[in-house]
Image 1 (cartoon, rainbow, N blue to C red):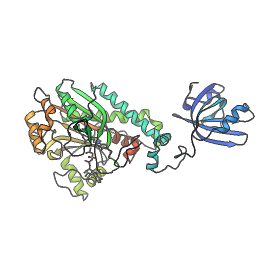
Image 2 (image 1 turned 30 degrees about the horizontal axis):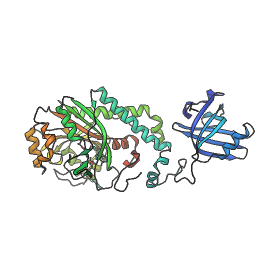
Image 3 (image 1 turned 45 degrees about the horizontal axis):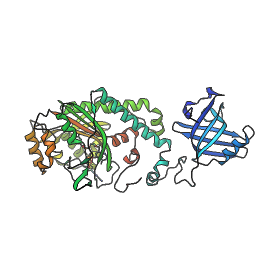
Length: 432
Ligand code: ATP
Ligand code: AMO
C-alpha cells in the first residue's frame, strides 16, 4: 500500500473515487452500529465513516479495535456528504492498523486545552502532532528556504565551519568546555572568526546556517543554549552594504511566509504585517534618549538594559536598526568610526524589544585588530591562525548574524523561544 492522497487533496468532487489515506486516529466516535474515525495526517483531517450495514463484517470489527493515536491506513471510496466535515467522508473497503498506540497517552494531541510547556517538551513527539505546533515549524522551514533563496540570488556561497573550536570568539565567558582528546576545546560560540578568515580567500560572499552554543546562565524567554544562527560575511563591503543585505533577507522571508503559509498563520492566529523594504534607523544616542525620556536611566556607554530595550521597542514598534554603538560595547573585531573612534560601525536589528540580529563592518587592518584585542583584555596569541589571515591580503568586509529561532518567534508571534525549537536546550533541559 502507498498513500494516494493527503486529506487536503481530497474533495467532494471526487465522489466515488478510490483513495488510500494514512495517518493517526485523531478522534473516534462509536455509536453502536456506526463508527466515525477522524484520521489526521500532515495536511489536516478526514472523516472515515463505518456503518455496520454497509461494510463487510471484518472491516467493522477492525474499526472497533482502533484506539486513539493508532497508526492506520484506509483504502476506501470518497462519498460526498454535506453533513461531513469539508463536505465528504470515506467509506472503507479495507482498514489496516499499522501500529497500536499505548494507553493512556501522556499528552493527547486532539485536546483543545494544552498541557504546560514542560509536559509538552517532555513529550515533544506527541506535542508536534498538533497542527498548531506543526504550523510553527512549517513557517520556520519556509523562512529558512526563503533565506537560502535570497542568498543564492545574491551570489552567496554556502559554507560550513567547525563547531569544535580551540578559542572564544565573542570575547565573553559564555563557552561550553569539552574534552578533545588531550586538548582543551569548546563548542563554537559563533562562526565569526572562520567567516572572516574566508574573506581572505576570494570567495567574497559566504553564508552559514548552523548551531551556536552559549553557556548563558540566565533563563529567559529569548535565550537558548543551543541556537541556530544565520551568519553572513561579505568582502569589499561596508556596514551599510551588510545592512542592506539583511533588509533583503528579512523582508523576503516576511513576504514568502505571508504568501506561502497563509493556512499556518491563520491556525496560529497571526496577522502578519509586511514591513517596508527599508527599515527605520536610529542611532545609539537616540535610543538612549528614548529610554531616558521613558524614565529608564542609562548612561552613554552602557549596553541596553532589558528595561531600555522594552522602552525603545514600545516607541519604535516593528523592525528597526540601532546604529553607531559605543566601540567599547562591541566585540574586538568591530571597525571603529574613522572620524570618531569612540563609536563604531556596528548595528543591531530589533523587532520591537527583541534583538534579532547583530552585525558590523569589521577591522581588516592587522595592527588595529591586534590593538583592539589587547584593549579588550584578550591575548593576541590566542588568535594565532585567525590573525595570520589578516597579514597577506585581507579585503575590507562586513557581516551579521541573524538568530533563526528569534526570527521564527517574530514570524509566528511566539513569546517563548522554546516554542520555535523542536528540541530546545536551556539551563534545565538536555532531553529529549
Ligand atoms: P546576544 O546573546 O545575542 O547578545 P541579547 O543581546 O538579547 O543576545 P544579552 O546581550 O545577553 O542578550 O542580553 C540583552 C539584554 O538583556 C542585556 O541588556 C541584558 O542585561 C538583558 N538580560 C539578559 N538576560 C536577562 C535576564 N535574565 N533578565 C533581565 N534582563 C536580562
Ligand atoms: P550575537 O552574539 O549578537 O552576534 O548573535 C547574533 C544573533 O544570534 C541570536 N542569538 C541567540 N538566540 C537565542 N539564544 C541565544 N543564546 C542567542 N545568542 C545569540 C540573536 C542574535 O542577534 N558574531 C556576531 C554576529 C556578527 O557580527 O556577524 C554574533 O555572534 O538573534
